[in-house]
Length: 312
Image 1 (cartoon, rainbow, N blue to C red):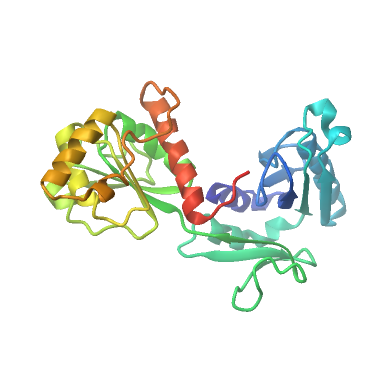
Image 2: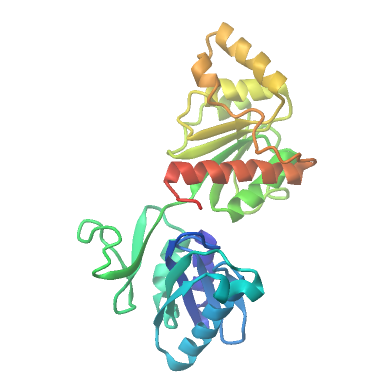
């Protein structure tokens, strides 16, 4: 979500209208909170679900840009509305169109890089403002058309800097994870192989594993260069309060390591069984980039559950 706020802040020097979905009923192509930025030249950043829904909102957004008048919208996605575009979800969506959203550039900048939870919303007069949960209850329809809480990115610690880590890190950062890579190989753990925003912790493993655990909720991924290094990292990270911890490897590897950890009293069976190994959704992935997609798909799924994000 942070990227849409980055784009809102970057676009503030030109006219645009922000449209967002404030609520849904039944089946819809996007959930509440979906956003799109509409420019006068027809360019769109983000999406409200595409198809005839987005086309209709775009037409209204362009009108709002010309008139300067914000507006609410509500659309029933039935047979009559969306048949030609194949959009017959059967539900309905409502939302707002804000042609003066550029005026909130300072808020967009804060939301693009939050260090704590920030709650904001659109009031009944279409003004964009911070919302204080101690004053107004969440989703107080008497005063607000829309409210949302934006949290700092979830920390993702990656042990290993090889091909899989190099594929996972940039994709994870695009998906609003704050990535830190750990390895003892400076020839790989450097910004020639990882985006500038990636934090790098390089040194001997016994020193790296003394670093205090991340602030919860956080995710961990163990993808070092071999089973021995994986086991070394896992012997420490299994004690950390990761919300989700995954390790690359086969079911056989997990079974053997599990037996060793229990026998050596490194971890209980219950603790080891919380480790996802093999990590990633089973999409028959081949190669580092497909493996990265499978891993991030599982991480997105787990993050939504942990943060209480409702999925359709």
